[in-house]
Length: 270
Image 1 (cartoon, rainbow, N blue to C red):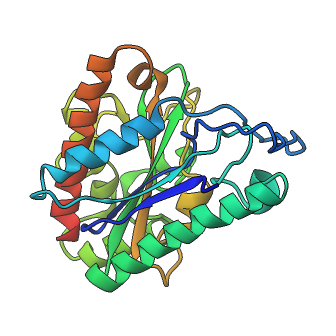
Image 2: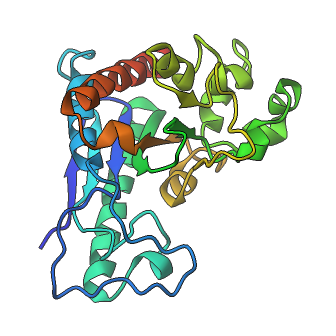
């Protein structure tokens, strides 16, 4: 059975959903908790959000859609956002893990050929008490708390998953503005819609006692912090309050997120 889904697109944008799978075949063993960081719970509703997000983004581009990569196996069976040794349990999930990442690489190669550069948005969910939308560029909370003058140094931006974007735009914008500028960053745009977002012009970095996910395996694997990569990668962590419960609240948020991503794509990717 195919446990990964790939929908080709027409934009320099890839949306991936690694933890929204809802299939739990009994013949596939559960992952063993032999790594301290193993998590088996799903990011609820992220698959539905990813699909609706892709549909809404089409409205801003005359029906042209993002690429979409979705994992259908539950996280207790597989974690495609982990290296093989942590995410796979047995032969079936090894095949599924490879299928997912083959689709990711197919989408990335297609975007590279057709556009020369592009953006990967990796959709996740969290249950942190702050209920912020967390945007990850593989820069730690500590790094984000550095003074702006330090944020703009080469050793910081060159280690971020949007390195290629900044390299292309560095003559017109500071790196800190791409991270948390009010009118120049993805976080700033979403914050301006009324959704508490970090990093943004309101929340430039998490406070010392606040939890924050800055980017997992997929963003680290495919992002442009690797100098040869031309695809940027951003992890978007959605709080439980925007994913579970009130469907109208969720739909309103997806509208705001789709507008923000569409704006970001038009602004920086042509």
